[in-house]
Length: 110
Length: 112
Image 1 (cartoon, one colour):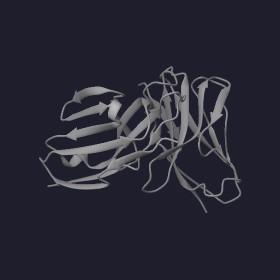
Image 2 (cartoon, one colour):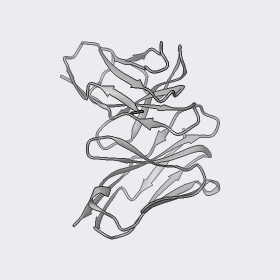
Image 3 (cartoon, each protein chain N blue to C red):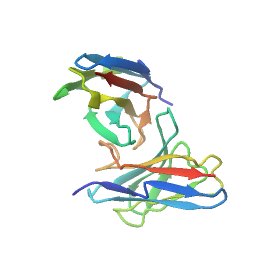
């Protein structure tokens, strides 16, 4: 099946710093989503981005489908950005199934 | 308020007992999903349903069962045949099978 690798696995930032999280996938996809899992376990949708670039406030994401990677940018990080960020992909030709990476754990300190 | 609800938030059971986790959505979504998350891991698909009265196994369906009798509801039963049932269970839905998935708040199941 498709492999999804996220890097880095862990990241510690000071408040106000910028960061880039990466998601590599091994096959073509027709769906790619970025999620933030908060300390209570809730998965919050950040982006639905099978290709192209999107921005939402301090967050933006870019997916280059032909090169099989996606990037999540966090600017001016805040302590509330702490948590685990997951990339999940749906391989082309499959119905429904999202395959998740193992996540990037982000800690933002004062 | 539109969304996905899961109940209960925490569930404790003795080994050997079946337990049913609830998932309800009022988003009018056709597709619904169940995922399992173990500590420090990503999510893995247990079952999914693209339409009422139809469902398919995901990657880790052994020891689980589901039903989809109503569009809004997709309950998951964790049977005694599931060898390691203690986990965080998340339900999701999407308009149709190939679109953005939205998740409920999850149920933490502990079996002792």
